[in-house]
Image 1 (spheres, rainbow, N blue to C red):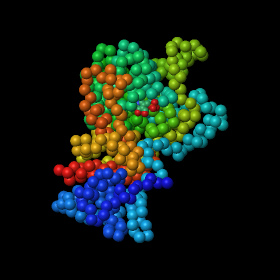
Image 2 (tube, helix red, strand yellow):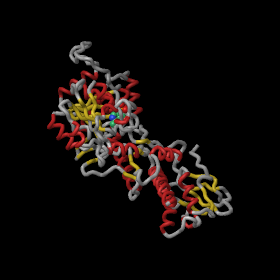
Image 3 (cartoon, rainbow, N blue to C red):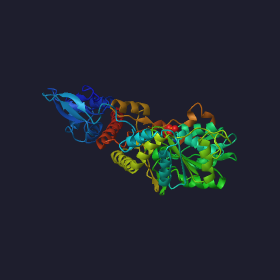
Image 4 (tube, protein in one colour):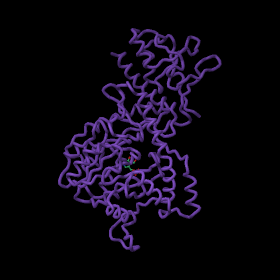
Length: 476
Ligand SMILES: Cc1ncc(COP(=O)(O)O)c(C=O)c1O
């Protein structure tokens, strides 16, 4: 059953005024109304942008709504009326099917089942099978790094990396304010002290000046996060880190496939970590990878991943380690996903290009910034809404999109505002992270999304924003 939209909420009478239509547009899920004649037949449709155009042509707010009416099917971004035999409005049709358009669902259309079946048929289902080694080798080759270790998820990838560099109590690790909590949790697991810094407005990732200002003699590592696929500003971060003897651990959980000046994210610093959770560019259900350049650190990480067991002496433990291994079943899915990664990346980029073209010229919507040399994988297309221009709370916006059949997510909450992490904020300021966190949201970006769904998401979003703008203008 497709989502049902109320016909009464989405219609106005020919006799209604532009001001009345504006109020209706600002309250219904699709921010669109069909205009009905005195016999109840659909005569046309009106969007907030149509009303704005009519007002700018000189129509008064108490003019009839027909002054703004456009033909049905013109620029509706996929919203069409369903008419009964008397041509009356019986329903609304949109590209939304039985469930909301999802944010990021996996595409498992390749050899996944075949490879998993092979694991079962050969009895290799633990972490010892050949798919693990193949997944690691192919991933390392893609990144151009000597060592890739498959692990159970992206969080333990971070923990393992920090542990391999010997980070622990007494050390400080610098992290950005806007990221998924796993970034900072991994630091806390080691016993080191996280130090939270603000992000930059162009990359939405760690601000290199804020990083430099937060360094103390105890700073051991920095974790730039390539947020939503946009590379962090690695050149200054790596230069500063090198000068000060600080390890650079790239959190590339969201940036499989992103590049900076041609170098893959994760292969720029001393180490990179990845997540293969089911919403990521490639997935193993749960899973992760950590890549290293240094042979000795990689060997230590390998040992720590396997309980800290001496690789030459079974059941002899030189250190307290962890079981952070990935299973052959998961790696089998990973290998099948890697075979499709170029297609996934191309689709993510074309999705982003379509959103960017649809949002171009909408001043209220801030899209990811194009930065020269930054090759964004556009894992999920995320935007921020200018709260100064749009009098609509981000959470209310998410709710509006949801009733229209569109799933969206808030950007992450600022780490410095959440109870477990407040103590790591010092007296630093976080204006950029705060602004984006309060106003940002991620939009449907599955590789399987159809173009007409993207148009519907962008069109509905723009109409909602325009309806707010319109109501404000009419009230002024
Ligand atoms: C930036 C970032 N770091 C780390 C992680 C942790 O990855 P996982 O969920 O695989 O543990 C995520 C997961 O979504 C993430 O977005």
